[in-house]
Image (cartoon, rainbow, N blue to C red; front, side, top):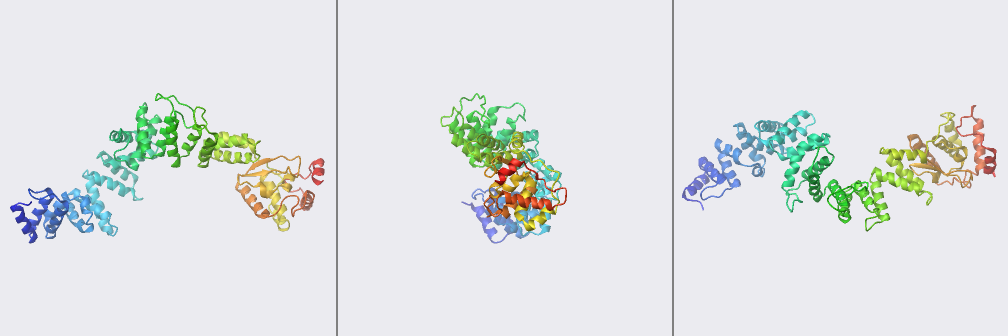
Length: 514
């Protein structure tokens, strides 16, 4: 309860006396013998005194009223913080700048003034001003990067946690591992020291802190910091894994399984593998979209020492990893499909699909297998002149499309005339199989690699859509197709502009014409 003296001050403040309002505001600001501390009530009386021109009142507002209290009143209070800053109070300038910059309706002139206030506060060593200036410079594409780095360094030295995290993140993205370790390791150790629940749960988890712990553990494992304590890296992983970081969950799962990601065992003094626990962590990482985790799960399910070994589950996880773009899984699926091509004929098409994807990611073994399975077609020097097929396509579009396919994919005459275009196109490859009409033919695959091949194949597919391209279709049998081809070739100027052999073996001619 207020004493007699304080009651007298309250009466005078209510009557409108500025000195009493200032005095009452200070009593609420710091607490009196009978009055509680209240920043909101203090601000009310100090503002009333400031409105009457009391300089000490707005200086008190600038010096002692926090931003969290001031932001509830927005632009109305910014003028008192502005005057306090102009009176030489750098801290008031920082609050003034924050109030102005969060106001979308503030004029450009006031924004420039707020920027000047931030710079004054930053030069005065105020960490909040240094950090705000860092973010403000970073949001301006025209600002030089060195200016942002300078303020970021100052804020980090001043102990601003966000700036320290930002510096570590910057070093990671730039690939400077040594700098990252120097910035991140002290932060990671602070986070680990503040963890509770037996040191496995972060006290105040945030996305930045979880990412930093995971990255720091990866950098330590890579040997960037020289010799390190494996237990420390594992602890960082466990803290991040408990906060759902997928890379950390993958690392903890592999540690529990005592293996590398390819399934190879690793010596670990921590005891025997715990596959059940490993599967729990790897499943958590996989469900967050980490393809490596699906691949690691497939390695566990093919282990003979795993009590729940299942080839079916292993294949399912392997396919998930391959579909998500994991190169090793694509290579393994491609090789497995190629080995099983005798069980199911279309397995070679599946093998080519996965091997092509793996080769596109730089897998040398996959590229070598592609050359073996689907060697590149040889090119013939006697190609048709540019306008020859265009003229033929006006009269015989289907024959012209077959000749274009022959030129793009290196088909022989029999293959070009007998190919079932509708069934041959598999998107990534062309399946050339005429064994149903030509007993001496062989099934072979040709990769679709160039833009020209895609265009030619798409045009042919469009022409033959809904048309029976077998011997019973509208093109007639092989003899009729061959007659049209020879008639067209005979009409062309010498030398014959065809990359397709004109003279086949006589015995082949008899077999096909029969």
